[in-house]
Length: 365
Image (cartoon, rainbow, N blue to C red; front, top):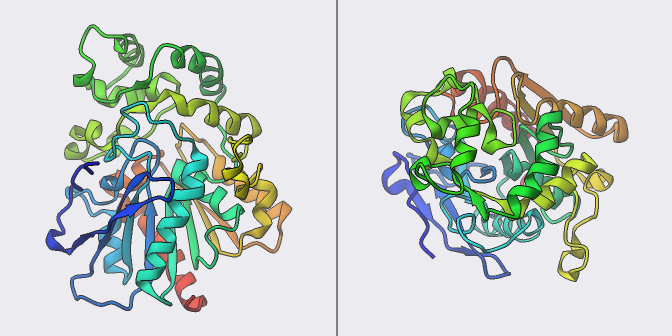
């Protein structure tokens, strides 16, 4: 398998670490070394969302999350789990569910990082579907001892608009019967293909003329919702959207539908004993969480809406002893909390403040 090179400005400070999950799936993992060569920093494992990749955390054109973590005294580790657009799985017919990410990818990446860092603290910053899968890993007790977790956009209690719900449950099944995936890059589609109608639909009412932007910002892959506030992106980031966000696999929709119907993260594979380690319902097992949680969201998130605010309310009511907080970033959407040109000023401070608090309160594990 060829992993697409990471787009970054760190030179030889990026260490690529071979990682193959125990089910045979090749993943991507890299460590960004501090400029001073220090080897005693707390480690932060960073998880992207579905169709994204570690590239969203290393944008050279902005002050990105990796820059901020390094300057704040942390050692970033970036995981490309099997839903990454740097990997080939979403483009082809290799099937997986979020169960695989929760059972294999995240716990085994955590285990490898722990072997490298010894008794240093390990924290996690997770985005979107990466955060949902992490919640299932945590509910299963597969990633114990984390010093702190930041979950952006959604975590345990996904909440979508009625329009997105309807399209996901009804239109999604129709699309799944006709398409293997939906590309983000219009150049791969062209004017006359089975995907052309989707690009035509998402262009309706769009202010931006770029079809790669329309399918993300105006009507996310045709299922409704918007993934970012357009004015928050640097021009260079906007021009690279099709590079940063890849193909959506249609065969992942049944698991996403089951999660949306339950309004919590659910195990999908009930007939395969390999997945018995995962709880059927992650929320019912959230009492196992022993790590402080920061649930983060933009106030204008028009894909997951107030999912994380709801999650904080539910967890606080069910588990009043749990350390869980919610921070809402005014004016931000979903992806722009990480890829926005001013995210370092408006968003990342909340993340670093929380990590610093966990760092000073915790003990090495």
